[in-house]
Length: 273
Ligand SMILES: Nc1ncnc2c1ncn2[C@@H]1O[C@H](COP(=O)(O)OP(=O)(O)OP(=O)(O)O)[C@@H](O)[C@H]1O
Ligand SMILES: [Mg+2]
Image (cartoon, rainbow, N blue to C red; front, side, top):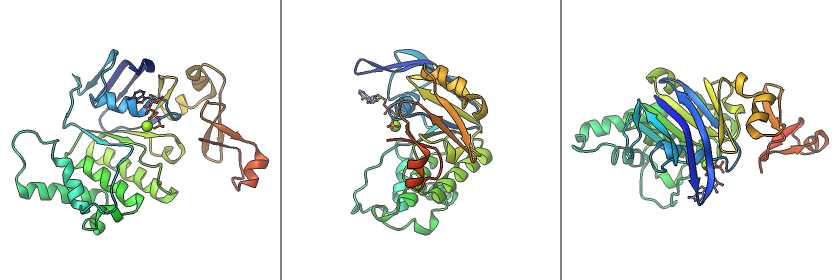
């Protein structure tokens, strides 16, 4: 479904992506993990055709990418919504149909049906008529996913959907996406800093650091050896209480056990600034 081949991207004369390479099959749920500034959003924009690689190629369904490809759904990292936006949830979701459907617009009835279906698949029907500006972070996150689903894409790119959610909502969104990949055979690439909330659901991990990537099953990628090779210096991957913690990467501040206890963390913890 998605084939990223040796992609190099310069932005403002800086090499942001320096040979990124991986594939995603239909029905696979894949995590794109990496520190702040690693180039995760840039990679999504490249897949969308909004950024042109200087070298390498991206194929979607064995074809070179083009802008506005209806096979791809995208949930951006940031949405800016005025709290007074006079837009109901279902109108917000319907925006995903415009710009996706080229040529003959869909008849009104099938538009409505698609919007209902998308709202239902993220369990947002109960607040579909509320003004979007008043929704909670978790509710809005679901509507954004519904907006990307309404065009019925076969590849879904989701940028940091978990960053503003509490643990329960984060797990709920992960479960939802996992289920969508399984039931619809949709390929999903989800961006996150923290792999842990995704551990049980992911089929594969693409880890991005220093512009390069390492892809494979979680147990293949998340080892001290693999990540040290990727970072170009020693980092340690620790498994503790069912969590994976990368120690020594540029984005990680190591909290010693005493300080962690003090902060109520109770374990060695790597946090991102
Ligand atoms: N339009 C641009 N022009 C110049 N530099 C850019 C541009 N967009 C991004 N960058 C730089 O490219 C690098 C990668 O940015 P990107 O947004 O892809 O990172 P990210 O992995 O998504 O980070 P985060 O986890 O903070 O969202 C950063 O150093 C950023 O400053
Ligand atoms: Mg980003």
